[in-house]
Image 1 (cartoon, rainbow, N blue to C red):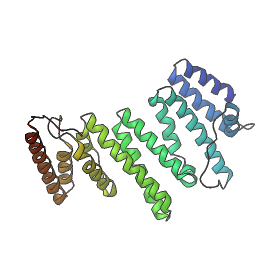
Image 2 (image 1 turned 60 degrees about the vertical axis):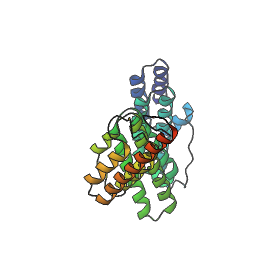
Image 3 (image 1 turned 45 degrees about the horizontal axis):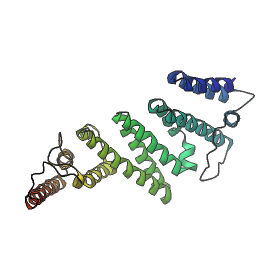
Amino acid sequence: SPLHVYLGGETLLREGRYAAAARAFEGAMRGAEASRTSSLGELNRAVGVPPLSTEAPLESAAERDEWDRYEYLAAVRSSFDAAGQADAALPFAKRALELRVIEERAPKAYAGLHVVAFKDSLNLGRLADAHEVLTDLHGCASSAHRRVDKEAEAIYRERRADCFNTLVSVLHARGGVAQLAKLRFDGELRSELFLALRRHAPASDVHGAAGPNAYELLYALQLQYGDYGGAARSMFELSARLGNDVAAAAAGGGGRKGVRR
C-alpha cells in the first residue's frame, strides 16, 4: 500500500540510502493518487505531513488534490533538507513549482518555494537551474501584473531582487562572478542584474580579486547589451573607487593590498 511504501522510504532515509528513499516517496505519492480506495490527502494525514495554510480559499476538488500534492512534496523536500541532502531535496521543490494552485492561492508560499529552489540550485553549483528559477519567478511577477494583483506582484519582485543579490554575492565569493556573462538576461531581468552588481560593487574587492571585479563585469555586460552610457558610468565609478582607496591608504600610511568592507 502507499502507506507501507512511504514508511519504507522513511527507513531508507534514516539508513542514508537517499536515492532509494526518493524513489520510495515518489512511488507512495503515485500509488496514493492512483488508488480508488484512498487519497494522497489521507496518506498525508496518516504519516503526519504538516498541513499548509492557503492565502485564499481553494475553489474545487481539483485544487484540493493539487494542494495535497504540494503538502506532500514540501514535507519530503524538508525531510531531505534536514538530512543535508539538497541534491535529493531539489527535485521535490521543482515538482512543487509546477503546481499552479500555489501561485494562485498562496503567492507568498510560492515565492518562498522559488527562493528555496534557487538557493539549493546555487549551492549545488547548478547555475543554469538557478537561472531557470529566476526566470520563472520573473514570469510570476509578470503574471501577477497582468492580473492587477499588486500585492502578489510586489512579493515576487522582492524575492526576485533577493535572489539576484544572493546570486552576485555568492558567485563573487567563489571567484566565479564572470559566469554571469554566460547567462542570458533580458528586459527587467537584465536591469535587476545590473542593479544587483551595482549594489554589490562598493563593498567588493577591486584590488586582489581573481578575475574581473564587480565593476569590470558590470562594464562588460553593459557593453554586451549595448548600454554604453551605463558602461561609461561603471568605469567612472571604478576609477573613483580606486582613487579613494589609494588616497585612504596613503593617508593611513599603509600599503593595503585590498579593501574589504
